View 1: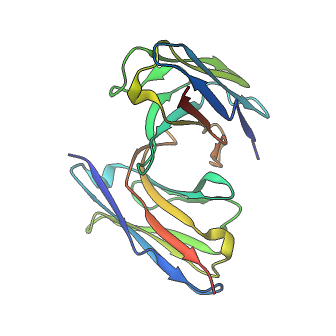
View 2: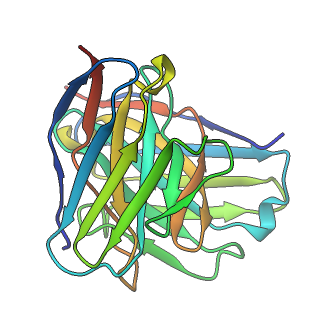
Length: 117
Length: 109
C-alpha cells in the first residue's frame, strides 16, 4: 500500500542546516508531485514547498524561500528538503504528502525538527 | 497571501448531533478548497476536495459545500470516531501558495 516515511529530523542550533528525506513506496513515485507541510505550535499547518513529479518545477512558501530547497531522486523514490539558516520558528513536525491537482493528498507520519540553542 | 479563517475554534457536541464547521477565505478561491481531518498523534487525512467531493475513505455523513469565499463542512450525525480537528486548505493560487485555516476542534460535550 501507499507509504511515505519522513526522516532526518532532530535538534539543531539556530543558523545551522538540516536535510529531511521522504521515502516513498507502494505507488509509482515518479508520477507524483510531492509537498512538504509543517505543523508548528505558533502557526498550525503551514505549506512549505512543492516539487513536480519530474523535478522540473519547485515552489516555496515566502517564509522559507531562499533558505529551503526541495529536490527529488526518482531512482531512489525519495524527496529531500534541505533547510539552511534555520530559525526558532522553523520548529515543528514536517510532513511530506503526495500532490493531486495542487493539493496534498496522502501524508506521511512526519519528522520532528527542533531549532534551539 | 490568502488568509483562511475557521470558526468556531472549538465545537462541543454530543454523539448523534449535527456539526457545522465554517471556513472563510480573504478572497475568492473558487472551489479550490479542501478539508482535512486530524486525530491526536496522526497525520491529517484528506476528507473533502473541490469544496464538495468526498474522499473515498469517508462515509456519506460528511459533506462539504460553498464556493468563492464561504465554505461549510457538515457532519450530519456525529460518531465517536469523528471527534477530531478539522482544517480547511485553499489551493487556488498559481504559482502555488497554499494556506490552511487555523482548525476547528470537534470535541465530545
